[in-house]
Picture 1 (cartoon, rainbow, N blue to C red):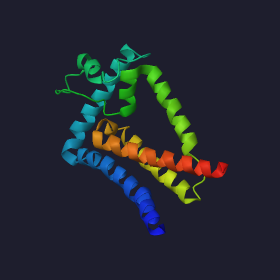
Picture 2: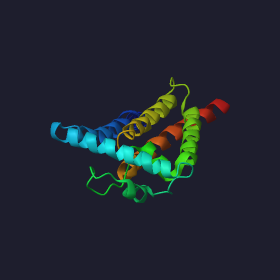
Picture 3: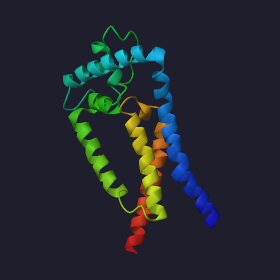
Picture 4: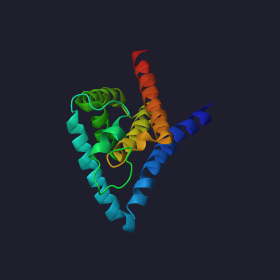
Length: 178
């Protein structure tokens, strides 16, 4: 019993967050190679600028869920000679698709989630909650310069980490009430 619990805790606390960081950092590191760095940086800046233009077209409610590529097409700069599906910044893409309404809803959800996840880390469940939250935080941080949550495998990993964090927090809270 206790050996299995320790193995599960090790996987949840070390392996899953480390996997999240590893998955997030690999593509970013490849893009930062010497040859690709200049081209990538110029294109990303141009994509972000054009994405802001798309955001300003419909700032309140956005262009609709999944509408980034359609919204970006008419504002795509000539310096970006290919089809762009994502803003290379999850928050900006959320703004383009859902406007200030969606950004506000996401901020409220994040604040409520942070409230649930913050708490004592002195217990095993507290550390498990923190580990899951750190893994999700790493993926969200990567989302400032890329679109990890738009990739199925990474979004699934984020869901697992979030489920672990929330589940451990709920069990911990139930134990305090008992």
